[in-house]
Image (cartoon, rainbow, N blue to C red; front, side, top):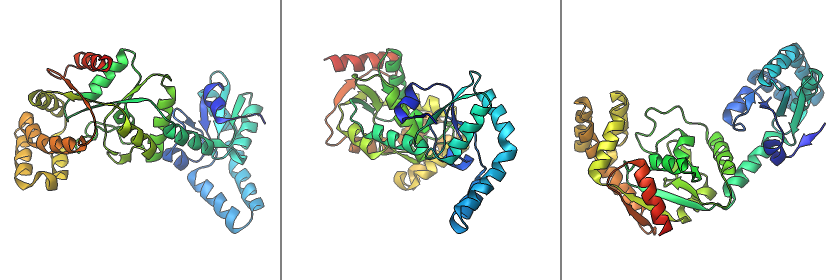
Length: 335
């Protein structure tokens, strides 16, 4: 069977990537863009594994064939739908019997199959190596409400390499960060997506990334990459506080009041009882500027502490207009 090393599989082999591992394995983490075409259900995989360990491997193989047989036609038909060009890239966990069996089946069904040597396990090794590889970074900082993500998007629109950590994490990085966002990926999937995004950026040019704490919601920025962020040049947007308040109030005004109240309550110990009560009252009165003004004191203090001891270039702005602030940031870099 022809097998592709991971770099060839990702860059030169063609066709949609079909992941034949069980649904739970796929949900835990998969190659970005891969489609799930499971050979076994989660229950079937568990039964085969138990038989392999507690009875013997031969019995496990026969059990697998019993499960596989009735699915053959359906799998070929599904693969044909997923691959109009009739060429696919295929993998299982370690490039063993599961992917080998499905390769045989799909080739029998007329498809050309590019098999990943050593399977998804090798992709994970590649992803972790990509995260540890040295990258030239530029970190964009600023107090909460400075519009950093919007500035990153404006930089990307001007052709600058940009890595959107919060976009990959489906979280805006605060107690309020999950509002209006889809569920966060697993930690493993976040790492996979991050590695793929880094590999897709042009080499030889600095990559812009937003200044983040180690945690983004329930996820953690991988240690090797976070260390590079901490050591990279830092440019801090200096946006007037009132402009930040209005910017955040406009964004939070579109959110559900119950979600906002829950976010404030999560900060109860840090805000103190009185500020928490006043912020909840402001939400009930639909006074978003008041709520933001009350909470912003905590976030400003926390972010200011995080800047201690980190050399930074301050970029003074008049407001939160993203394109204008992106131009200021680029001018600061040139100077």
